[in-house]
Every structure is written in structure tokens, then in C-alpha cells.
Length: 59
Image (tube, rainbow, N blue to C red):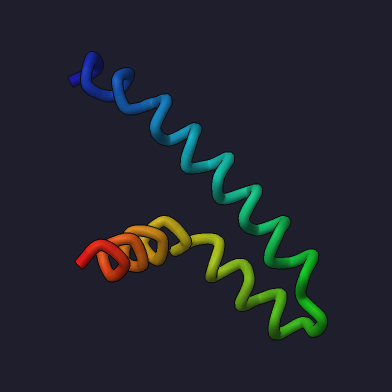
């Protein structure tokens, strides 16, 4: 079990840095507090949106 956890660690770090980058991007482009809060939510789900748009593009 410990061996499996260590093999997933780099993926978590990549997702974390992606989340931080997306949050900074969305919050810095927000003009209102509500848009900033929506930006944090977008930063959480951006990988799912990316995959969805890629599937829609290739389908």
C-alpha cells in the first residue's frame, strides 16, 4: 500500500501546481468578488473542463 501511494505523489503535485496557477489566473482576471469566487471553483474543476472540451473537439 505504501508503495502505491508514493507512485501517485508526482501526479498530486502537478495537479496542485495547476490548481494554484489556474486560481491565480482566474482571480486576477476577476472584476468582482463573485467572479473571484467563481474563479476558485473553475480552478478546482479545470482539468475536467479541459478533458470535456478535448473530447468534444475530437469527436
